[in-house]
Length: 206
Length: 234
Image (cartoon, rainbow over all chains, first blue to last red; front, side, top):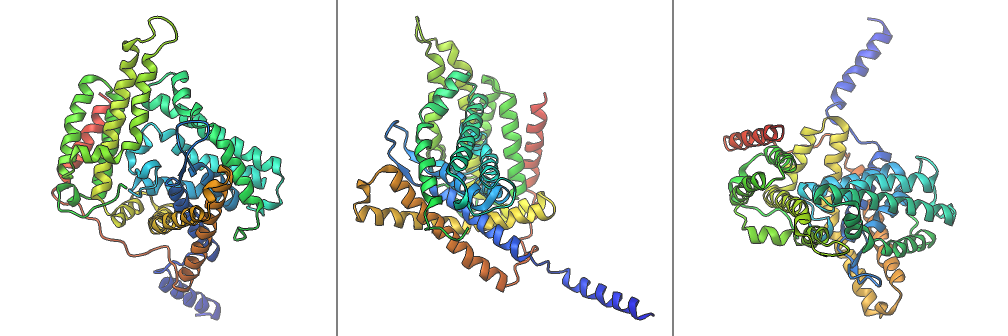
């Protein structure tokens, strides 16, 4: 046996031993853990509700969580965080509005909003960072930040209204009245709050 | 809050994959048979599912109360027309059936959540979704379950602190900003500590999961799931 082939055999043996335990790379570990913690944060934010100044429907902060997932984690991991939120909720984590959970919620009246979340987080992240790689969001212009969140809001509400049309068999007008008119004005406040959070120095972990 | 509760019901003994299959079959059947006859049959089936989970219909409805306003608003808004005769009840028939369908699908999913522990759901997902994406979902979902209660507590402490300092007098935007900033900081802080701990303990792609095994209880349920899927195409 030549020296080189002996080396290769030893290398293969080491591989055979270590293949039993497949370690997760450092960067992936960071991203998975952050995405999971953000998914849980979006769920926790659905428990925080404030009285709405312009409508009887209380304001919950889930949508703010989606914006921030795209802004702080970037498009890929922001969307992953939202996907984890949906899967965890489907499998029984009480993360949906009102502490609800289960597969049925995705096919229920609010299913459209929920299913649009990964796409909204991806769009917000991609616009804010101008690509797939996350950068420092504080360095981004105000117009880009607000524009990204407006696009995200439009995506969420379009899917939400479409979801109501499909699940409740409503016409576009009724679905728009039920699903967007009462809820959408509060999004302006959330966008303003998100700008404040991104621009403050309080969060440095991103 | 809707979560798993330990028990000895028939539904508790079923394999999580079987229960997921029944839910998917039920939803498909409900969407393809949104007629009075189809929904009556599915109402009986919902009763059977709730009984198998020893869950009373009232308790199950209480768990999905958040959705009730939407379920009522749809038919009501559809019946109202701008102009004489103002209310046309026939317009509300389709939306009423659709709302009832959504209610049934939600009730069946309540039975799943009540009777399936997280580890089993995670194992099911990792067996159903192959390769790294399945593992990533499995790990991520398990972490979401662990992070959720502590982050809810963090946010609730932030709100109490805000109230104690007369924060309720501040503008709504400021209150949202302060509570969410605390949430994001805590989420990142907890993530960083956990990440360090995971690296130190050789975080691997292949953890040991509970063994899932189909029992004789699963046979009728799998037949039911298959039947429901077939009924969708009839």
